[in-house]
Image (cartoon, rainbow, N blue to C red; front, side, top):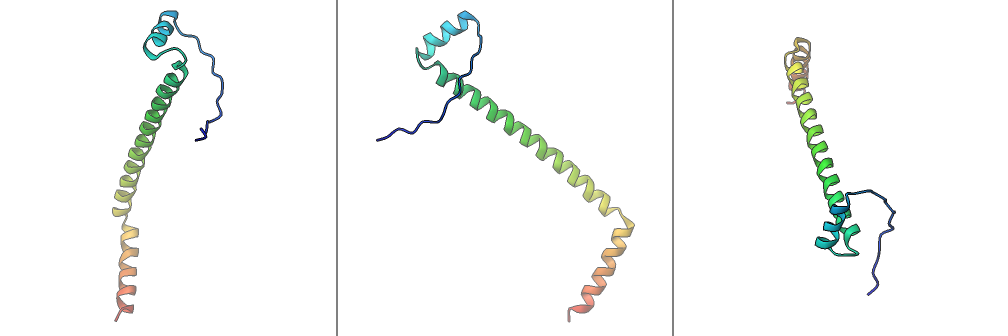
Length: 92
């Protein structure tokens, strides 16, 4: 079976020597890149999810505020009444 690989980009970072030694010991030689990639990917996914949740929350607040504003608008209520009369008269 042929293995499909994703193109990779080299990323050079500096870490404390003791941290690198721990990584090699815990993760295994030759597996550090895959381990770091997984951690970074999960962290970025979490940050994106938090961002989307915050945007959703802000949108809901704005939507509620707009609904409240429209509900208290006398002009809009009067226009609704006119439309109700027009539509009500046309359905018989």
